Length: 153
Image 1 (cartoon, rainbow, N blue to C red):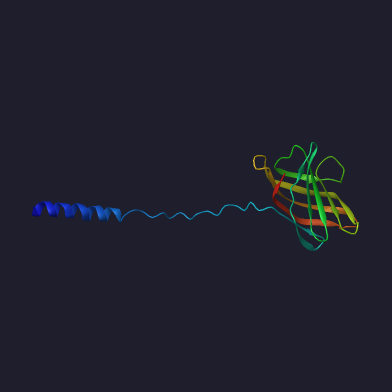
Image 2 (tube, rainbow, N blue to C red):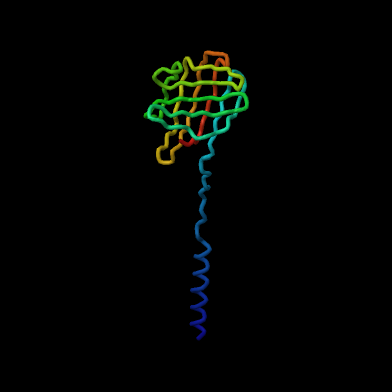
């Protein structure tokens, strides 16, 4: 009987010692990328954050139009949209272009620049990218640091 008790205790001690040796995870959980829509740009020297509304995907272009207190920006992208960098051309031309308007009737249109589409997700129907452009008109002369993320369409 004494041997049975000792064997049982030995098995318990070994079992507990192995159970306490389990390796703890050392991986750090990753924070998922934000999916919150955002649109911002610097107009001249004024950094501006815009409200976000869904873009409009038409037969010939995808139009992102966002509004802030003093400005409305419309970014026109030819369909089919793809990731990568492309030139911004004069408004109304074939290609990507930008229109800037003010509530008082000011109007400027792109003359040159570039836009980079970093993500065009047709499954989730979102688009993200950056842009900069020179403008002609009385609403502003340049847009720098243009950025849009997770804009739905």
